[in-house]
Image 1 (cartoon, helix red, strand yellow):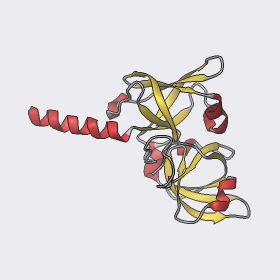
Image 2: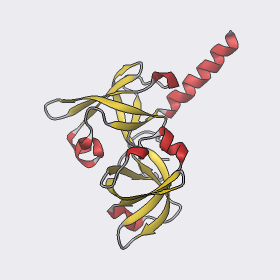
Image 3: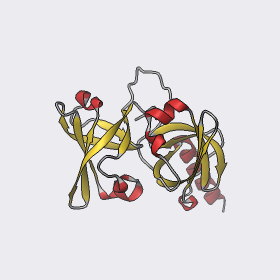
Image 4: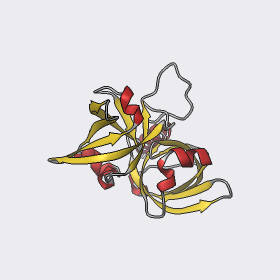
Length: 202
């Protein structure tokens, strides 16, 4: 379980294919504190640490085909900057929202607007998967807990303050960037329960 409050970023230093899987080596100072079997959130994707090199400040995670099909991990490259968050501590303050690290689908950045001190990012996603956003609701974009500004079927926008822009990989986003989105878990439960209720009424 995560909160969507990105701790730091890491750099992809190696990508090795193993049949349909890929093993990704990431370099970050946080690696000094990691251990094998630990869960880490990578651009919103929960992956398990399978190898750690504390001396080199590197660790390895494995992405299977299911993950590659539903996220943007297949487009990562050596040098790619990735948002990182370790799993939440139960005794800590809950500063973001509940992020499971289970990406629902990808989205495409359609526009970036500079707002005289902040930025507004617009995204489009496939509405056929029955996921929705609501204005002022929560959404995870590449693992960053954010508030929805504009909400339309298959489209939404978020506003980014300078701090978030600098410490996450939002500063790399441009028109056409492919990002991972996880919709609010409570909203997903409500939508499914409502569908079941309406189906029973037919």
